[in-house]
Image (cartoon, rainbow, N blue to C red):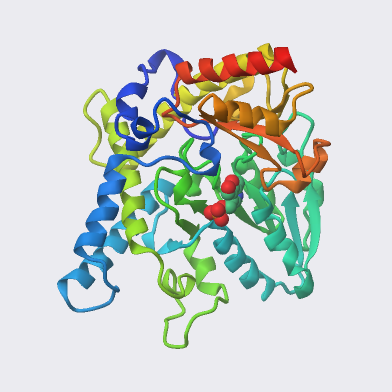
Amino acid sequence: MHTTLGGKPKSEARPKFPVESLRTQFPALKHAAPFIFFDNAAGAQIPQIVFDAINRHLLECNVQRGGRYPQSIEVDATIDRGRRSVADLLGARDPSEVAFGMNATSFIRLVSLAIGQSLGARNEIIVSEMDHEANIATWMALESFGAKFHLWKMRDDGNLHSEDLWPLLSAKTRLVACTVTSNALGSIVDVPAVAKFAHDAGAELFLDCVHYGPHGLIDVQAWGCDYLACSGYKIFAPHMGFMWGKRALLEKLPTFREDFIPNEPPGKIEAGTFVYENVAGMTAAIEYLELVGKQLSSNGGSSSRRANLITAMAAIRGYEEELSIEVLEALEKSGATIYGIRPKERVGERVPTFCFNLPRVSPQVVTEEMARAGIGIRDGHMYAPRLMKRLSLSMDSGAVRASLVHYNTSEEIQRFSDVLQKLSKNG
Ligand SMILES: Cc1ncc(COP(=O)(O)O)c(C=O)c1O
C-alpha cells in the first residue's frame, strides 16, 4: 500500500483554497497576464516578499560574511536564519545539517564523490529508472571508484515500488539514490518504505527532493532518509540549492575543504562563497509558505513555523489534487496518451505534473501552439533519458509536460484544455 506523503487533510475538513488572494502575492503572474505558467517543474515564480528580501540584502548587506562590522555580521545572521528556516521546512532537528549552494546537481555530485572515496566492500549503488539524470549519472560516474550499479525499474503504473527494490539490495549495497517525485511523471514514491528496506540491508538512502519540494510537506525524520537535495528555485525562491544530511554522516563524509576549515558540517559542505541574497530569498519563500499556513488556520496559526508549514503544505496538496483531476479530465478528453498515474482515485500518489503526447501531433508542435495561445509548457526528454527509453519515447522529441503548482487555477486549465481539444481535432 502506497502511503500519501504530505499530510493531506480529510476532504470534509478542507477549507476553500484561497488561490486568488495568493496569486496577488506573485508579481510575475500579474506582469505576464494573461500568460499561463504551466512550466513550474523547471522553476516557479516568486512572491513579493522574496523580491523584497533579495533587494534588502543587496541594499543593506552586500558584503562578505565573517567580518566584524555591522553589514557583515548581518550576512552571518541571514545565513543563520536561512539554515533555521530550511531546517523547519525539512523537519530537520539540527540547522547545522543544512548546507547552501548552487543547485541540487552540485550537491548530488559532492555527496557522490565523497561516497565514492569510501566505498570499501559495500560498493553497490542502486539508481532508479524514473529519476532525473542528475540523480543517476552522478552516481554512475563512480564506476572508476569501483562502484557497481543496479537499476530499480519503474512499473507500468508509472511509479517505483519498494517491493521491487528489495531483491536488488544485499550486504554489498552502499546506497540507494532515488527521487521523492518524478519530475517527468509527477509520481510520488513511498520513500519511508524505501528507507526501511535500504536500512534493513545496511545501506543509506539519498533522496532527490527537487520536484516534490513545492508540492507537499518534507519530513526527513518521518521519511528516515540519510541525505536529501533540493532546489530553491522550484520552491518559490531564486536560483539556489540546499541539501540536508544526518549530522553523524556529514561529519564522516570526505569533502574538499581548505585545511583551515574545520571538518564539520555545514562548513565542510560549503567550500567557497554561495549566493547570500538567494539564501535571504529562500528564507522569505519559507515565510510565504508559513503565512499561507497561518491564513488557512482557523485560529490565526501557530507560534511554531513548522506547524504552520504543515498546515500550508497539507492545503496545497489538497488543492493540487483538485487541479490534477481537472488536468487528467482535459487530457483524457483530448485523447492524449498520459504517461504516469492516470486513475483519478490515485491522484494522492501524484503531483500536478503531466507528461503526455497527442495522437498525430509532435510534442514540439503542441508546445509551440500552446506558446502562441499564451501558455508556457515544455517538450523534450525532461532530463530523464532512461525513463524516455522505458516509455518508448525518443530523446529527440520526447513528450509534452505541463506542470502546475498551487497558484494555478481551474480557469487556466480550461484554457489549456481548449487548445488541446483544438490541436487533437486538427491532428
Ligand atoms: C527531479 C530533479 N532532480 C534534479 C534536478 C536538478 O536540479 P538543479 O537544477 O537544482 O541542479 C531537477 C531539475 O529540474 C529535477 O527536476
